[in-house]
Image 1 (spheres, rainbow, N blue to C red):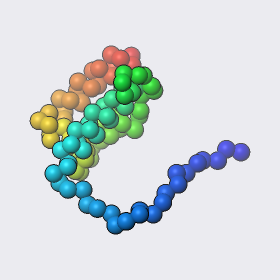
Image 2: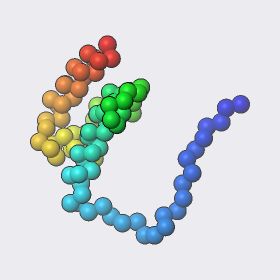
Image 3: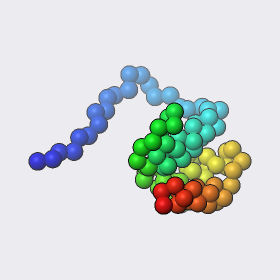
Image 4: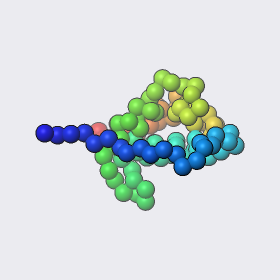
Length: 97
């Protein structure tokens, strides 16, 4: 019988700290870069893995106004989200056939 393994969560060791808004730009940049790499199956240092459907779903999400949505991350760096999605679809089709 197969059982699903659930992650073990522990209580925080201290009070949770709010992320300062000044850190949002860096977080958005890293989230954008790593999610696009994951959606295409690109590992750190150029390795290859199976493309991540969850990352691709985040890219295509209609949830455009949340603080860490794909669209918000793009706009943070002066990139039009719709144009970015078009390019990513083009490359995904080309790479994954």
